[in-house]
Length: 466
Image (cartoon, rainbow, N blue to C red):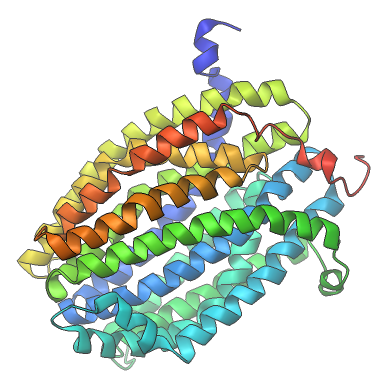
C-alpha cells in the first residue's frame, strides 16, 4: 500500500462511495425542497403562522429521529447480512424495523392528537407572542398526526433499499411524492382551482396526501420486485427473538445517543426562541429550512459509510475495513468543505424564498446559514466517525460521546447563556456548537481502540450463505 493510499483510497473506491451517496443526497434534497416549498408558501401567511407551523416541526423531528434510530439499528445488521448473502437475516432486520417502528408511531400519534399544546408550549415558553403561535401550531399538528404510519413504512423500506445498494428507487419515489406535495400545497394553502383556501391546514393535508402516495409506491415496488428483505405479514409473528434482542441491545445505545442529541437540540431551540418574538422563531426556522439543502451531505456520508464498512465487515475482510475507515474519514472532510461552499451559495435564496418575512427574521436567517455552512466540514467528519463505529456494532461510542458533550457542555452552556447573558439567538447557537470539537476528539481516540472491527453477520448467522 502506498503512502497516499494510507490516507486516501483509489479513484474506484470514491467512485463507488459517490455512487451510493449521491442518489441518497438527491433523495434527501428533494424531500428538503418539499419542506422549503412548504416554508415558502406558509411564509406568505406571515411570521406568526410560519412560526406556528415550524414549532410543530420539532415534534415531527423527534419522531423522525426515533424512526431513523430504529432503522439505523436494524440497518447495522441489514448491511452486514447483505454482505454475507444471508437473506433470512435481512428479513429479520426488516421485521425489527417494522415492529419497533409501530411502537414509535403510537407514541407520536398520542402526542399529536391528545397532548399537543402541552408539548408545543415548551418551544415558546418566553416568547412574547406564544399564545398566537400555539393556536396555529395545535391546529396544524393534530392533522400531521395522521402521517405517522405512512412515514414509518416509507422510512423502513427506503432505508433497507439503500442498505442493499438499491439507492435509486427511493430517489424516484421521492421525486413523485415531491411533485404531489407541491401541487396540493399550491391548491390547498391559497385555494386555487376552486378549492377552499385552507392556509395552514392546507399545508398539512398536502403533506398527508404526499406521504400516502409515497408509501403506496414503496409497497407496490416490494410486491413486484420482492427484494431479499421482503416479508409477509405472518413473518412478523415468527421473529428470531435472540437476534431481535441483539439488535435491540445495539439499538438502545444508539437510541440513548440520538435522544440526548434531540434533547440538546430541543433545549437549544426552546432557549433561543425566547430571545424575542415571532421574528426570532420564523427567522431561525427559515435558516434551517435553507440549511437542510446542504445538510444532505451528512445523510449521504452516513449511508455510504454504513453500506461500505458494513458489507466489508460482513464479508469478513477486516483489514480492508481498517483501510476504508481512513479513506472515508479523510474523504468526508474534503466533501464537507465542498458542501460548506454550497451552503454559502444558498444564502442567495433567503431574500427570494422568504421575502414575506420581516427584515429582522431574514437577517437572523442569513447569519445562521453562514454559521451552519462554516461548520459543515466538522459535522460531516463527526457523522462519519459515528457511522464507522456503528457499522461494526460499537454503538457505545456514540452514547458516551453524546453523553459527555451534551450533558457536560451543551445543555448547561445554553442555560448559562440564557440566564446570565444577553446574547442573541445566533450568537448562542454559534458558541454552543463550537463544543462539537469535543465530540471529534473523543471519537478519534475511541476509534483507535477498534471495537468496531467485528463481523456481526458471522456472529449472528441466520442461514448458510448460498
